Amino acid sequence: MAEEIHLVIARNLKDIRERKKLSLDKVAELTGVSKTMIGQIERGESSPTITTIWKIATGLKVSFTSLIHEPQPDTKIVLRDEINVLSEDNGNYRVYPCFPYHEEQRFELYFIEIEKDGYHHADPHIEGTEEYVTVFDGEMTIEVNQSKFTIKRGDSIRFKADRSHSYRNSGDTLVRASMTIYYPETQ
Image (tube, rainbow, N blue to C red):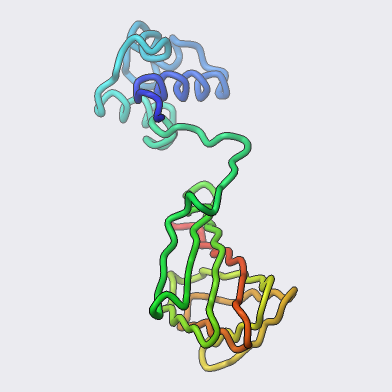
C-alpha cells in the first residue's frame, strides 16, 4: 500500500537536505520557507501545499517529483502474472512491460512473445531512440528502413528505433525475446 504523501515528502526532503549537507537554516534561506515549517515537513507533522513544495524544489535546485515520489527499492521482483500484457495482431504479438520508463534511467524493458507468423509494425520513436533485442527462443525478422535482419535463439540486435521498424516471427515456433528501449536525454 502506498505511503501517505506527507510522509514521502518528509523522507525525501530530509534525504536531499542531508545529501547536500545543508542545515535547516540554510534550507530556509534558499527556499524562503521558514525553518520551523521545514522541520515540521521533515518530521511528517505538516502536509505542505503544492506552492510550498515548488518553493523547496526551486530553492534546492531539485525536481518537484524528487520530493513527492516514493523512492524505488534497491531490489524489485516483477512477477509475470502481475504484468498487464499488451497484445496486437489478434493476440499473436504480446508485450509484457517489466520495467517501465523512468526519467532518471531513460530506458524501459519488455519481454515479448510472437506466435508463428505474428507481426508488429512500430512507428518511429523520438529521435535518438535505440532498441536492444535478444531472442531466447525462436527466430525473429526485424525490418528497419527496408533492411531485414534475422535474429535467432541466443542472438541480439541493436538498432536506431527513430525510424519505421517491424518484428515478425519468421520461424516455426513461438518467439520469446527481451527488448530494451533506450531514450535520448531530453532537452
